[in-house]
Length: 128
Image (cartoon, rainbow, N blue to C red):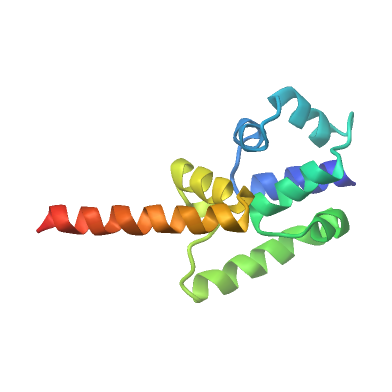
């Protein structure tokens, strides 16, 4: 069921309901109602949720919760072997920044990159 998929993805990535609701700009109680199955999110909210985690809406809808643990575990092993940092291992601020970045338009992402490059140059100057 959709509610189980949302909860599974959120928990596997070590996000709280409050963090997700803040990112999606909805009340925590509203998000909680999606996880309990009392309400269903609309497609635009599902799309935003998917962007936060770098997955597709189709993936969310088609997860088999009874088999998902092994899928996540095998993906985690592969990513760790490749030396990638997993979203679930990021600190709170890093998760928040990454999630907000994923929710931005391509145009805004380019602006963010420019700002970050400028900040990096400034910080390198100050280190000398």
